[in-house]
Length: 491
Picture 1 (tube, rainbow, N blue to C red):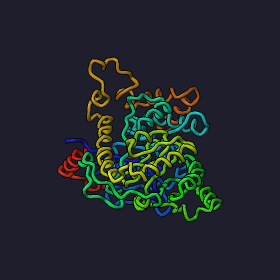
Picture 2: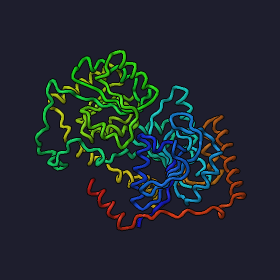
Picture 3: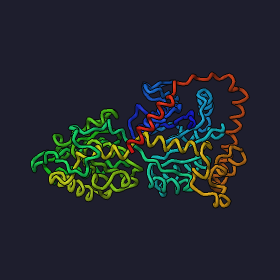
Picture 4: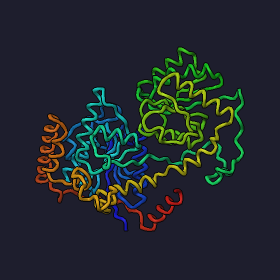
């Protein structure tokens, strides 16, 4: 029988805020619960969301009342979070702490404190960062501090893995690639075709009605309106695309500081009847917006994965996206038109996509079934579960890291269970000391202070006096088998 775990997902980014990280945490938690694990989520308080909340699928969410400073990231407290965090971990009898997102203060602090408490830790990176500007240098140093003492790291794409390995100076064998997924049933095309199935791709089913030369093509954009999401690029490209292709219109959903630039562009070019600004939309409304269009435009300047383009393809939209980060790994070439993150190339790529649709060269009616076979959250949960088994010792080190017995003697001390899973204070100090001439010493001081705080909490607030929360009923063994059977049938 496979072991089950009590897992804490920790991140500043969670519902009700929409986004890829938020959706990833929720969907992964749901599927892990389906596999018999206990999952809680720890995040900061949102407007109208405070205290402890239960989601309909039995996942408990702790909203910690911390100050939010920028883009839903909480103010870093380093040590102030520890008493609350310890109380939650003991109440819920947590075995594994799984943090998400590079810019989440709660994530990094949770991993740091969890190691002090002797808990297994996993970190998932969802973003790409550079190496030259001051903000990236600070973020990378913070990541180096956090990941110097973590059991395993997960990245959502191979490009993301390369970036994280370089930023945090990690052994590549300590990093696994597990992509995002999509609930295809929630992103069906507007007019589903029952005769088109995953088994009919080779039978060349009849195409849908061809777009005429004067039919309007709708281009959809759903994104946070920030610089890194390519909003400036979008603002410059929209007037040129509409000028080159008169029978086109745009639907833009999302909010952010760059929204005012889009509104000014619409006013200056008198495009009120050609560009519709919807503002922020809830995640459950994304499909209803997407099915209004023919093309999905994704002008991001940096992206580790890009779940939204998978959702768009599942809705039957032809995807135009910038060839940056992990985006080229996400969808096959017949579903996408790639562009350089430049205005001229984005305009040209969009024109190419419009011409392909009018010439009926793209079978978008087949996209939904193809996406359904490519991405599954059940598959993501099973692969994440294998990481949990590897760091907890449920499977052998050789099986988890993929080396044979002949090479075991030469296995580096910085790799595998012997290198990262020791909770001894002296071993932790050795790992942090190598983070830099000055930073290493500062990190060691933080570890010692955190350990002393932990001893103080153990003496003055003994764990015997902390009430244990009753578990939500877990899935039965038969239900777990049905889940695995369903996942294998989809593969």
